Length: 166
Image 1 (spheres, rainbow, N blue to C red):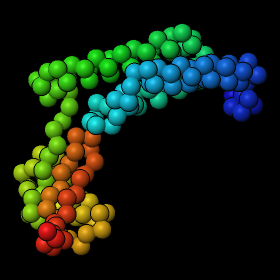
Image 2: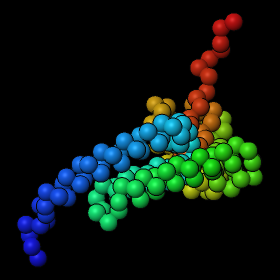
Image 3: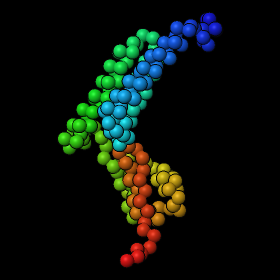
Image 4: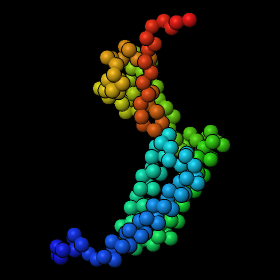
């Protein structure tokens, strides 16, 4: 094993990384700007997968000499086009939307956990308590609802703090 190659192989690799990395990054920024805000929205698990795929593809372009800039740019453009197509189809077809994204799950209503919904979402009582504590609430009895959103985040809706003024 050549120990010195672990730390430095050649200036060619460094120059390639600087040039190709800058161009690939610029291409990704421009492409995401053209494709619109929805491309990187984190509304559901599918969106998260696409975001991770962008990062993985960019890393491959940067670090793999066997991936040419044109191939990498094509891969990024393909991911953006597929994301655009999936979101466009989701807007036009409720059936398709249900197939590619999860619906939010109500886990607690009026301070009472909903065991069946929690089981389906694989959320424990301890995790539900932790979500409520994260929101600065003393306990479940202070909460009107806890919803597991389609992106995996939790929404906590507190009980009203008293009568509202007219």
